[in-house]
Length: 439
Image 1 (cartoon, rainbow, N blue to C red):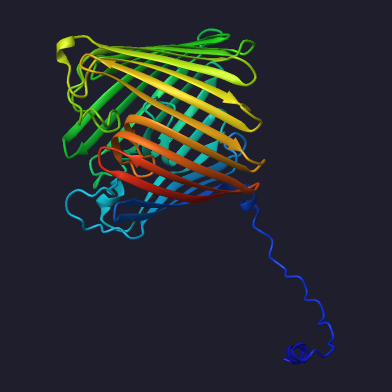
Image 2: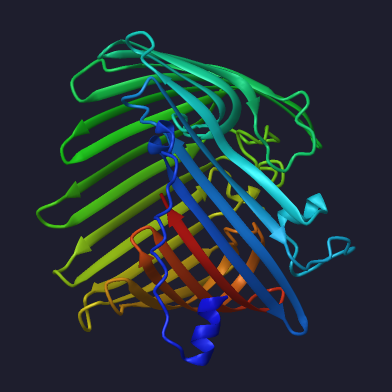
């Protein structure tokens, strides 16, 4: 109080003694191995007089190193909050998303949450918890466990079991899965694998019991990587894929070729094997060939092209979601042109079907204003798109967006984006503002 009176009256005063620096307890050792990212994004949308406001939070955590430590763990998830929406709206709403089916303000999803055990005995690895079987091309999410044993440098066996994860299914009762694989290196630069998956899925369309067997072969002959995989569903041939890719570093040329054939008509399947087959029935046998290539023209310019063609085994079996088509795509891009820090890209697509031909196009300009600030302007027209945040589906989308990203600190990044979009529903105006912290 005396110091305050002296300041008001302008009287001379003595400096208070410096405060002792605060002391903090040492952090536990296990915190040193904890790393991850936290991402928060606020999205505001408007259509005419209607508006919507949502908050998205995502978290990724990892502790330990699965290649070095006996125990390590990882977890990831997302929380979404509807800040002002009316979840009791009956009928169609332009702001509907999959999370609104829960009819509550805040929803959450745990994507992964597992514990790794590495080499408790030589060659043994185990994982328990919510995980994604990324070793299988189907990439199935599962609540359960798996274990693998490296018999030698040329052979490995693995097994798994648990309950498949369907994020938007009201009741997982009756669902379960198990299987495994045997992998070997029978020749130099070669790899082969046999896979088995049993999946039971009970949903609104009934009870599905699916048995899938996969055979995979891979060979590397620099610069080429050649692979093939075929699957059998309920003891009948389902499909086959052959793929070859190469990167020629000296010339800056890359190429990827893929051929696919579906043997049998696909009826309703468990969600884990094909979540779309139930809704797009029937899927008739077809051939599909795709070719993609890119070429660096110089230090500043590059070009990419792709072509995909699908042909039905029976041309008369075409349907709304089961038809023949060809797609041609060409992209030109620049780096540090027309000036240092500027990048430009433009893409054109040509689609051809038996009933119609059409074009889609897009382009973007990026400007690195400073070492930590980057801006971009993008415009595109697409026939079909899915919003990555909400899962909303839109058709005939015309959009233009302006974005800004600022690296505030080495571990903190802020970003904002405004998007004006016209689609088959209405005209949307969206503002996204977010921040990401890495630790």
